[in-house]
Image (cartoon, rainbow, N blue to C red; front, side, top):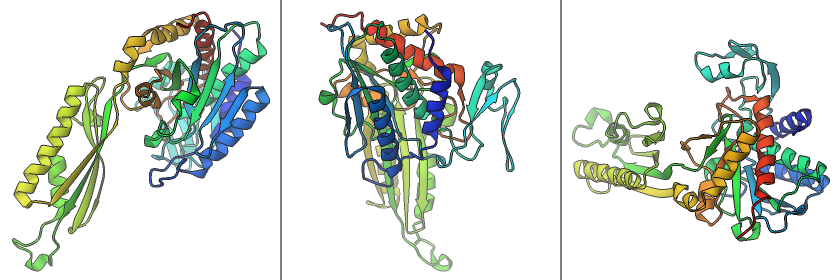
Length: 414
Protein backbone atom coordinates (compact mmCIF):
# COMPACT_ATOMS: atom_id res chain seq x y z
CA UNK A 1 0.00 0.00 0.00
CA UNK A 2 1.36 3.39 -1.00
CA UNK A 3 -0.61 6.37 0.24
CA UNK A 4 0.29 9.83 -0.98
CA UNK A 5 2.25 11.14 2.00
CA UNK A 6 2.55 14.67 0.65
CA UNK A 7 -1.19 14.94 0.08
CA UNK A 8 -1.90 13.55 3.57
CA UNK A 9 0.47 16.00 5.29
CA UNK A 10 -0.82 18.96 3.30
CA UNK A 11 -4.38 17.97 4.15
CA UNK A 12 -3.57 17.90 7.85
CA UNK A 13 -1.73 21.23 7.66
CA UNK A 14 -4.70 22.82 5.92
CA UNK A 15 -7.01 21.74 8.76
CA UNK A 16 -4.72 23.24 11.40
CA UNK A 17 -5.35 26.68 9.92
CA UNK A 18 -8.97 26.59 11.06
CA UNK A 19 -9.62 27.94 14.54
CA UNK A 20 -12.01 25.29 15.81
CA UNK A 21 -11.43 25.44 19.55
CA UNK A 22 -14.56 24.52 21.52
CA UNK A 23 -15.79 26.52 24.51
CA UNK A 24 -17.90 25.12 27.35
CA UNK A 25 -19.05 28.61 28.30
CA UNK A 26 -21.50 28.55 25.41
CA UNK A 27 -24.54 26.27 25.31
CA UNK A 28 -25.04 26.43 21.53
CA UNK A 29 -24.01 23.58 19.24
CA UNK A 30 -21.41 23.79 17.98
CA UNK A 31 -20.12 25.86 20.85
CA UNK A 32 -17.95 27.99 18.54
CA UNK A 33 -18.54 29.13 14.93
CA UNK A 34 -15.09 28.03 13.77
CA UNK A 35 -16.09 24.39 14.03
CA UNK A 36 -18.90 24.90 11.56
CA UNK A 37 -16.54 26.70 9.18
CA UNK A 38 -14.26 23.65 9.20
CA UNK A 39 -17.24 21.33 8.81
CA UNK A 40 -18.41 23.18 5.70
CA UNK A 41 -14.90 23.06 4.25
CA UNK A 42 -14.72 19.32 4.84
CA UNK A 43 -18.20 18.72 3.41
CA UNK A 44 -17.08 20.40 0.18
CA UNK A 45 -13.92 18.29 0.14
CA UNK A 46 -15.91 15.07 0.56
CA UNK A 47 -18.23 16.10 -2.25
CA UNK A 48 -15.25 16.74 -4.52
CA UNK A 49 -13.91 13.27 -3.72
CA UNK A 50 -17.21 11.76 -4.84
CA UNK A 51 -18.74 10.54 -1.61
CA UNK A 52 -22.51 10.20 -1.40
CA UNK A 53 -25.21 11.04 1.13
CA UNK A 54 -23.22 13.99 2.51
CA UNK A 55 -25.18 15.64 5.30
CA UNK A 56 -24.14 18.58 7.46
CA UNK A 57 -26.72 19.69 9.99
CA UNK A 58 -27.04 23.02 11.77
CA UNK A 59 -25.29 21.59 14.85
CA UNK A 60 -22.08 20.81 12.97
CA UNK A 61 -22.50 17.04 12.61
CA UNK A 62 -21.19 15.87 9.23
CA UNK A 63 -21.80 12.39 7.81
CA UNK A 64 -21.06 10.82 4.43
CA UNK A 65 -21.04 7.43 2.71
CA UNK A 66 -18.68 5.47 0.51
CA UNK A 67 -20.90 2.75 -0.98
CA UNK A 68 -19.91 -0.91 -0.89
CA UNK A 69 -17.56 -2.12 -3.58
CA UNK A 70 -17.92 -5.85 -4.18
CA UNK A 71 -18.88 -6.75 -0.59
CA UNK A 72 -22.68 -6.37 -0.40
CA UNK A 73 -23.01 -8.66 2.64
CA UNK A 74 -20.27 -7.05 4.72
CA UNK A 75 -21.10 -5.04 7.84
CA UNK A 76 -21.33 -1.27 7.57
CA UNK A 77 -18.29 0.25 9.28
CA UNK A 78 -17.99 3.79 10.59
CA UNK A 79 -14.94 6.00 11.02
CA UNK A 80 -15.24 9.00 13.33
CA UNK A 81 -13.21 12.05 14.34
CA UNK A 82 -13.98 15.42 15.91
CA UNK A 83 -13.59 18.95 14.60
CA UNK A 84 -12.84 20.82 17.80
CA UNK A 85 -9.54 21.39 19.49
CA UNK A 86 -9.22 21.67 23.25
CA UNK A 87 -10.16 24.92 25.00
CA UNK A 88 -7.16 24.47 27.31
CA UNK A 89 -4.77 26.33 25.01
CA UNK A 90 -4.79 28.79 22.10
CA UNK A 91 -5.84 27.32 18.76
CA UNK A 92 -5.95 30.40 16.54
CA UNK A 93 -3.27 31.28 13.97
CA UNK A 94 -1.53 27.93 14.30
CA UNK A 95 1.87 28.09 12.65
CA UNK A 96 2.63 24.44 12.02
CA UNK A 97 5.98 23.51 10.55
CA UNK A 98 7.86 20.32 9.71
CA UNK A 99 11.11 19.65 11.53
CA UNK A 100 13.62 17.10 10.29
CA UNK A 101 14.34 15.73 13.74
CA UNK A 102 17.90 14.58 14.34
CA UNK A 103 17.66 14.14 18.09
CA UNK A 104 17.99 16.40 21.10
CA UNK A 105 15.78 19.31 22.08
CA UNK A 106 13.60 21.23 19.62
CA UNK A 107 13.47 25.03 19.73
CA UNK A 108 9.88 25.92 18.92
CA UNK A 109 10.36 29.66 19.30
CA UNK A 110 13.40 31.82 19.90
CA UNK A 111 11.57 34.93 21.10
CA UNK A 112 10.11 34.12 23.50
CA UNK A 113 12.30 31.10 24.11
CA UNK A 114 10.11 27.98 24.00
CA UNK A 115 11.99 24.70 23.91
CA UNK A 116 10.63 21.17 23.84
CA UNK A 117 13.24 19.13 25.71
CA UNK A 118 13.86 15.40 25.76
CA UNK A 119 14.16 15.69 29.53
CA UNK A 120 10.53 16.78 29.76
CA UNK A 121 9.32 14.72 26.80
CA UNK A 122 11.50 11.61 26.49
CA UNK A 123 9.15 10.10 23.86
CA UNK A 124 10.75 12.53 21.37
CA UNK A 125 13.76 10.24 21.16
CA UNK A 126 11.63 7.53 19.54
CA UNK A 127 11.31 9.68 16.43
CA UNK A 128 14.92 10.54 15.71
CA UNK A 129 15.48 10.62 11.97
CA UNK A 130 11.82 11.39 11.21
CA UNK A 131 9.94 14.46 10.07
CA UNK A 132 7.88 15.88 12.95
CA UNK A 133 5.14 18.50 12.74
CA UNK A 134 5.30 21.08 15.54
CA UNK A 135 4.06 24.61 16.25
CA UNK A 136 5.87 27.83 17.17
CA UNK A 137 4.99 27.23 20.83
CA UNK A 138 2.27 29.88 21.03
CA UNK A 139 -0.62 27.55 20.15
CA UNK A 140 -1.50 23.90 20.25
CA UNK A 141 -1.13 21.95 17.00
CA UNK A 142 -4.57 20.39 16.70
CA UNK A 143 -3.49 16.85 15.89
CA UNK A 144 -6.20 16.02 18.40
CA UNK A 145 -8.18 15.44 16.30
CA UNK A 146 -7.35 16.94 12.94
CA UNK A 147 -4.84 14.14 12.41
CA UNK A 148 -7.79 11.76 12.72
CA UNK A 149 -9.81 13.73 10.18
CA UNK A 150 -6.90 13.88 7.71
CA UNK A 151 -6.17 10.16 8.05
CA UNK A 152 -9.82 9.20 7.49
CA UNK A 153 -10.23 11.39 4.41
CA UNK A 154 -6.94 10.17 2.93
CA UNK A 155 -7.86 6.53 3.57
CA UNK A 156 -11.18 7.02 1.78
CA UNK A 157 -9.46 8.84 -1.05
CA UNK A 158 -7.11 5.85 -1.43
CA UNK A 159 -10.01 3.40 -1.67
CA UNK A 160 -11.75 5.61 -4.25
CA UNK A 161 -8.59 5.66 -6.38
CA UNK A 162 -8.18 1.88 -6.02
CA UNK A 163 -11.53 0.37 -7.03
CA UNK A 164 -9.87 -3.04 -7.25
CA UNK A 165 -9.96 -3.19 -3.44
CA UNK A 166 -13.28 -4.66 -2.26
CA UNK A 167 -14.95 -3.20 0.82
CA UNK A 168 -18.35 -2.91 2.44
CA UNK A 169 -20.37 0.24 2.99
CA UNK A 170 -18.33 2.85 4.86
CA UNK A 171 -19.87 5.62 6.92
CA UNK A 172 -17.91 8.70 7.93
CA UNK A 173 -18.86 10.87 10.89
CA UNK A 174 -17.29 14.14 12.05
CA UNK A 175 -18.55 15.74 15.23
CA UNK A 176 -18.23 19.01 17.17
CA UNK A 177 -17.44 19.70 20.83
CA UNK A 178 -15.82 16.40 21.81
CA UNK A 179 -13.28 18.21 23.96
CA UNK A 180 -16.01 19.65 26.18
CA UNK A 181 -17.85 16.34 26.50
CA UNK A 182 -20.70 17.03 24.09
CA UNK A 183 -19.55 15.24 20.96
CA UNK A 184 -22.15 12.49 21.12
CA UNK A 185 -24.99 14.65 22.44
CA UNK A 186 -26.75 15.06 19.11
CA UNK A 187 -25.25 12.20 17.14
CA UNK A 188 -28.00 10.14 15.48
CA UNK A 189 -26.78 6.55 15.83
CA UNK A 190 -29.80 5.09 14.02
CA UNK A 191 -29.40 7.43 11.04
CA UNK A 192 -25.66 6.74 10.94
CA UNK A 193 -26.50 3.10 10.35
CA UNK A 194 -23.13 1.49 11.09
CA UNK A 195 -22.82 -1.95 12.66
CA UNK A 196 -19.69 -0.81 14.48
CA UNK A 197 -17.28 2.08 14.22
CA UNK A 198 -13.91 3.42 15.32
CA UNK A 199 -13.01 6.84 16.61
CA UNK A 200 -9.53 7.82 15.46
CA UNK A 201 -8.53 9.98 18.38
CA UNK A 202 -5.78 8.33 20.44
CA UNK A 203 -2.20 9.40 21.03
CA UNK A 204 1.00 7.73 19.90
CA UNK A 205 1.57 4.90 17.47
CA UNK A 206 -0.31 1.60 17.34
CA UNK A 207 -2.75 2.18 20.16
CA UNK A 208 -6.22 0.68 20.39
CA UNK A 209 -8.39 1.55 23.34
CA UNK A 210 -11.61 -0.07 24.45
CA UNK A 211 -11.49 0.83 28.14
CA UNK A 212 -11.94 4.31 29.53
CA UNK A 213 -12.74 6.05 32.78
CA UNK A 214 -16.14 6.16 34.33
CA UNK A 215 -16.48 9.91 34.66
CA UNK A 216 -18.44 12.47 36.63
CA UNK A 217 -18.16 16.21 37.12
CA UNK A 218 -18.76 17.75 40.53
CA UNK A 219 -19.56 21.34 41.45
CA UNK A 220 -19.33 22.61 45.02
CA UNK A 221 -20.96 25.89 45.99
CA UNK A 222 -19.86 27.36 49.33
CA UNK A 223 -21.79 30.09 51.09
CA UNK A 224 -19.69 32.20 53.45
CA UNK A 225 -20.29 35.28 55.55
CA UNK A 226 -18.23 38.41 55.11
CA UNK A 227 -17.54 40.62 58.10
CA UNK A 228 -14.93 43.35 58.45
CA UNK A 229 -11.72 41.48 59.34
CA UNK A 230 -11.11 43.80 62.27
CA UNK A 231 -14.29 42.62 63.97
CA UNK A 232 -14.82 39.17 62.50
CA UNK A 233 -13.97 36.80 65.35
CA UNK A 234 -16.67 34.08 65.62
CA UNK A 235 -18.65 35.89 62.90
CA UNK A 236 -16.84 35.50 59.58
CA UNK A 237 -17.24 32.31 57.57
CA UNK A 238 -14.59 32.39 54.86
CA UNK A 239 -15.83 30.46 51.83
CA UNK A 240 -12.31 30.33 50.37
CA UNK A 241 -10.97 28.72 53.54
CA UNK A 242 -13.67 26.06 53.38
CA UNK A 243 -12.93 25.42 49.69
CA UNK A 244 -9.26 24.90 50.54
CA UNK A 245 -10.20 22.67 53.47
CA UNK A 246 -12.42 20.54 51.22
CA UNK A 247 -9.61 20.12 48.71
CA UNK A 248 -7.10 19.18 51.40
CA UNK A 249 -9.46 16.44 52.61
CA UNK A 250 -9.23 14.68 49.25
CA UNK A 251 -6.79 11.71 49.24
CA UNK A 252 -3.36 13.21 48.68
CA UNK A 253 -2.06 10.60 46.24
CA UNK A 254 -5.25 10.29 44.21
CA UNK A 255 -4.70 13.22 41.89
CA UNK A 256 -3.85 13.15 38.16
CA UNK A 257 -0.23 14.10 38.74
CA UNK A 258 0.28 11.04 40.95
CA UNK A 259 -1.69 8.37 39.06
CA UNK A 260 -1.36 6.24 35.92
CA UNK A 261 -2.82 3.20 34.13
CA UNK A 262 -5.96 2.01 35.95
CA UNK A 263 -5.61 4.31 38.95
CA UNK A 264 -8.53 6.68 39.47
CA UNK A 265 -8.39 10.22 40.83
CA UNK A 266 -10.08 13.38 42.01
CA UNK A 267 -9.03 16.48 40.08
CA UNK A 268 -9.86 19.99 41.27
CA UNK A 269 -9.63 21.96 38.04
CA UNK A 270 -11.27 25.23 38.99
CA UNK A 271 -11.62 27.27 42.18
CA UNK A 272 -12.75 30.86 42.47
CA UNK A 273 -14.71 33.16 44.70
CA UNK A 274 -14.45 35.43 47.71
CA UNK A 275 -15.05 35.33 51.45
CA UNK A 276 -18.79 35.57 50.82
CA UNK A 277 -19.06 32.75 48.27
CA UNK A 278 -16.84 30.32 46.43
CA UNK A 279 -17.16 27.68 43.76
CA UNK A 280 -15.02 24.60 43.30
CA UNK A 281 -15.23 22.27 40.30
CA UNK A 282 -13.63 18.86 40.09
CA UNK A 283 -13.48 15.70 38.01
CA UNK A 284 -14.11 12.21 39.36
CA UNK A 285 -12.51 9.39 37.39
CA UNK A 286 -12.16 5.62 37.87
CA UNK A 287 -12.08 2.62 35.52
CA UNK A 288 -13.83 0.39 38.06
CA UNK A 289 -17.55 1.13 38.36
CA UNK A 290 -17.74 0.14 42.05
CA UNK A 291 -14.80 2.39 42.93
CA UNK A 292 -16.34 5.16 40.84
CA UNK A 293 -19.54 5.03 42.89
CA UNK A 294 -17.46 4.93 46.06
CA UNK A 295 -15.65 8.12 45.05
CA UNK A 296 -18.94 9.95 44.55
CA UNK A 297 -20.16 8.83 47.96
CA UNK A 298 -16.89 10.03 49.50
CA UNK A 299 -17.40 13.55 48.14
CA UNK A 300 -20.93 13.56 49.47
CA UNK A 301 -19.68 12.54 52.92
CA UNK A 302 -17.10 15.36 52.90
CA UNK A 303 -19.78 17.91 52.11
CA UNK A 304 -21.98 16.55 54.89
CA UNK A 305 -19.09 16.67 57.36
CA UNK A 306 -18.28 20.31 56.57
CA UNK A 307 -21.95 21.25 56.72
CA UNK A 308 -22.04 19.82 60.22
CA UNK A 309 -18.96 21.88 61.09
CA UNK A 310 -19.98 25.22 59.54
CA UNK A 311 -23.76 24.99 59.49
CA UNK A 312 -26.40 23.32 57.37
CA UNK A 313 -26.53 24.67 53.82
CA UNK A 314 -23.01 26.09 53.86
CA UNK A 315 -21.99 23.65 51.13
CA UNK A 316 -24.06 22.54 48.15
CA UNK A 317 -22.63 19.63 46.16
CA UNK A 318 -23.84 18.66 42.70
CA UNK A 319 -22.48 15.55 40.95
CA UNK A 320 -23.32 14.70 37.36
CA UNK A 321 -22.20 11.55 35.54
CA UNK A 322 -20.56 12.19 32.16
CA UNK A 323 -19.78 8.79 30.64
CA UNK A 324 -18.99 5.20 31.58
CA UNK A 325 -16.36 2.59 30.75
CA UNK A 326 -17.13 1.28 27.27
CA UNK A 327 -15.46 -2.05 27.99
CA UNK A 328 -18.75 -3.54 29.13
CA UNK A 329 -20.24 -2.68 25.74
CA UNK A 330 -17.23 -3.79 23.66
CA UNK A 331 -16.57 -7.18 25.24
CA UNK A 332 -19.69 -8.82 23.72
CA UNK A 333 -18.46 -7.78 20.23
CA UNK A 334 -14.74 -8.13 20.83
CA UNK A 335 -14.12 -9.09 17.20
CA UNK A 336 -14.10 -5.34 16.40
CA UNK A 337 -10.97 -4.99 18.56
CA UNK A 338 -9.38 -8.10 17.04
CA UNK A 339 -10.05 -6.77 13.54
CA UNK A 340 -8.25 -3.50 14.33
CA UNK A 341 -5.30 -5.37 15.83
CA UNK A 342 -5.04 -7.49 12.69
CA UNK A 343 -5.08 -4.35 10.56
CA UNK A 344 -2.24 -2.81 12.55
CA UNK A 345 -0.13 -5.94 12.18
CA UNK A 346 -0.77 -5.84 8.42
CA UNK A 347 0.90 -2.40 8.24
CA UNK A 348 3.83 -3.46 10.42
CA UNK A 349 2.65 -2.23 13.82
CA UNK A 350 2.43 -4.06 17.12
CA UNK A 351 -0.97 -3.20 18.64
CA UNK A 352 -0.92 -1.66 22.09
CA UNK A 353 -4.08 -1.98 24.13
CA UNK A 354 -4.09 0.54 26.94
CA UNK A 355 -6.85 2.05 29.07
CA UNK A 356 -7.88 5.58 28.15
CA UNK A 357 -7.18 7.96 30.98
CA UNK A 358 -9.87 10.25 29.76
CA UNK A 359 -12.98 10.09 27.65
CA UNK A 360 -13.89 9.63 24.04
CA UNK A 361 -16.98 9.98 21.94
CA UNK A 362 -16.65 6.24 21.39
CA UNK A 363 -17.51 5.55 25.02
CA UNK A 364 -20.83 7.35 24.87
CA UNK A 365 -21.62 6.04 21.39
CA UNK A 366 -20.99 2.49 22.60
CA UNK A 367 -23.64 2.97 25.26
CA UNK A 368 -25.94 4.46 22.62
CA UNK A 369 -25.78 1.22 20.63
CA UNK A 370 -22.78 1.79 18.35
CA UNK A 371 -19.74 -0.27 19.48
CA UNK A 372 -16.87 2.15 18.98
CA UNK A 373 -13.28 1.46 20.13
CA UNK A 374 -10.67 4.19 19.78
CA UNK A 375 -7.67 3.98 17.44
CA UNK A 376 -4.46 6.00 17.53
CA UNK A 377 -4.08 9.26 15.61
CA UNK A 378 -0.31 9.52 16.00
CA UNK A 379 0.15 12.74 17.96
CA UNK A 380 1.72 13.46 21.34
CA UNK A 381 1.23 16.06 24.10
CA UNK A 382 -2.26 17.10 23.08
CA UNK A 383 -3.93 20.23 24.48
CA UNK A 384 -0.77 22.27 24.77
CA UNK A 385 2.07 24.08 23.03
CA UNK A 386 4.32 21.02 23.02
CA UNK A 387 1.94 18.95 20.88
CA UNK A 388 3.70 17.25 17.98
CA UNK A 389 2.89 14.78 15.22
CA UNK A 390 5.47 12.52 13.53
CA UNK A 391 4.74 12.31 9.80
CA UNK A 392 5.37 8.52 9.57
CA UNK A 393 2.90 8.00 12.41
CA UNK A 394 0.23 9.98 10.58
CA UNK A 395 0.85 7.83 7.52
CA UNK A 396 0.40 4.68 9.60
CA UNK A 397 -2.92 5.98 10.89
CA UNK A 398 -4.25 6.27 7.35
CA UNK A 399 -2.79 2.90 6.34
CA UNK A 400 -4.40 1.25 9.36
CA UNK A 401 -7.77 2.76 8.46
CA UNK A 402 -7.51 1.33 4.94
CA UNK A 403 -6.65 -2.13 6.30
CA UNK A 404 -9.52 -2.02 8.79
CA UNK A 405 -11.95 -1.32 5.95
CA UNK A 406 -10.44 -4.02 3.72
CA UNK A 407 -10.62 -6.66 6.47
CA UNK A 408 -14.16 -5.65 7.43
CA UNK A 409 -15.16 -6.28 3.82
CA UNK A 410 -14.22 -9.92 4.26
CA UNK A 411 -16.74 -10.37 7.08
CA UNK A 412 -20.25 -11.55 6.33
CA UNK A 413 -22.85 -9.62 8.24
CA UNK A 414 -24.91 -11.81 10.54
